[in-house]
Amino acid sequence: MRHLLALSLALLSSPAAAQQVGTLVSADPVAETPPGTQAWRIRYWTANQDGQRQEVTGMIVAPREAVPAQPRRVIAWAHGTSGVAQKCAPSNNPAFFASNPMVEAMARRGYVVAAPDYPGLGSAMPHPYLVGADTAHSVLDAVRAARAIPGAAAGTRFAVWGESQGGHAALWTAISARDYAPDLTLIGTAAAVPPTDLAANMRQASDPNARALLLAFTLHSWSERFGYSLDAFTNKATQGVIHRLAENNCIDVDNKPKLGTILGMLAVRQAVQKKDVTRMEPFARAMRANSIDPARVPGPLLISQGSKDTLVAPAVTRAFAKAVCKRRTAVRWIEIPGGSHIDGARGPRTDETLDWIDARFAGQAPPDDCRRI
Image (cartoon, rainbow, N blue to C red):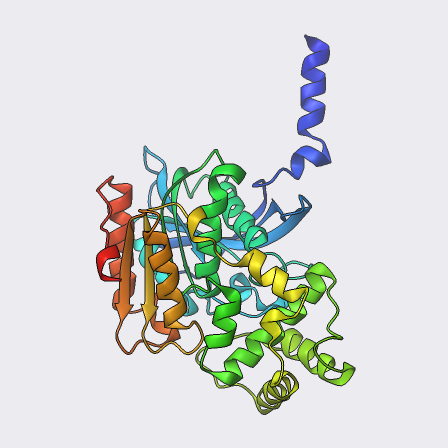
């Protein structure tokens, strides 16, 4: 028995045990937070779809009040595109709460918010932009890591809510949760303006400059993450433009792009104007693999979409929602007449989505809008 105890202690203190997915590495308190909230910048372990361990970063936010007798409910917040460079981590942004107003709203309702940066944002590795399983694992492991912070008092029941890139991450989290994190219980998924069919959306998104920038992010990310060559797309000079656009630009919805960024987007547009990049391998295969399969998404599900979104094509999102409905999955559909890309999770939609999440935790029957989608 003594030898077994010694072996158990040795295993627990070994590097392998310390790097178990979901293990919290550090939690640094954030000095300035909205009234009534507390937050920690965290480092924790996750694993990509190949099983490789990765130390990543994020933010945990909780109500600033006495620890309750029962664990708190959790929402995993999956942020929209902030960039693909390490410096673009939302948790490092001094304006984190202003840029993510939904987080404060969640904490004010008593939720613990687990807000991962995703791999490569805040950590030294390629960012797997729109790579479903890699991102989903980091979301699920952020929820696990939150449970190791005593002041957060996070439970195992959680909802996931994301916008844009984060809507894609939220849907992939729903797909992955049961197999990757059976210790957690997902009660509902909210996806605002989510890219679903990546190729269809790349073809149908109506803002050519934004589409060029997101294409540059994708090409750079996947060339780094998977080792894909860009030679079939364009020459070395334009490849340099693609990499510089990705490495130098973090997204700030409140500021217009700089002249150099605009010129870079124009160069990418010109380079691919006669090419259908959605059918060029191996990128086409990666787009198929990381699109959302409607048959794999469990309910209940909320989807919100602006009718004037120029980045995520409304017709593509509607077709996805209809396909989910054919599986007899309950879908709450929020269409925002005249809404732009940034309207899907903000403003009045914040309370509407949180009301829906509250009802899922309360065990109420989910509403189903499938007949009117």
